[in-house]
Length: 230
Image 1 (cartoon, rainbow, N blue to C red):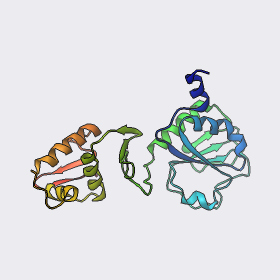
Image 2: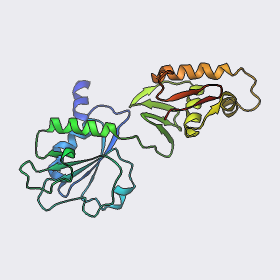
Image 3: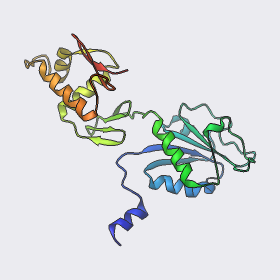
Image 4: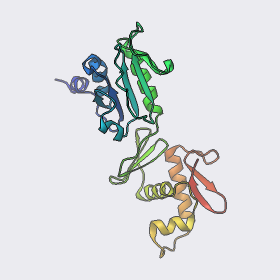
């Protein structure tokens, strides 16, 4: 079988993914949707009700709740999750209505518009950091593998660029002088010029697509040093 056909059957290789939790009393009814989400590089976790202990402890990007069956609300008694939620409702209006019609989609229904809605909502959620990660806006740093992704796209950084970005993120918005950065990166015995930090910051900004005049990631504090943007 040609490789392209194998890829279509298996789904695309996923370098990164977003996690979706699906809560439905009858998950078999959602099988076409679940299969399509999996092939589109989503990490899909399925629960029968929202009170399962594991669900409240997970880091997820979107919650999809099936309210399309009358009398069945899988989120009943569930603690509030601070993530976007999409409710699947009966197109005939016989299911359990969502509290917010703007966050509802009909099911059963056309899968194309539903997938587009899911992609839009999951993409707007803030990335969650794992134990070996640092996350800032759409930038995710894998501290163990020493890799960086921006909005799911891998960016190649030098080790020094990686260390500078990590140090700025760990400062939590605090300003670090050039001397601070040099000492944290290379120790107090480093005697290089402070302009070396500026050179690496310039390269960092270029790779991130960050405009120093209107920064999204790294702000220059004149006469002091650098910090992460608000």
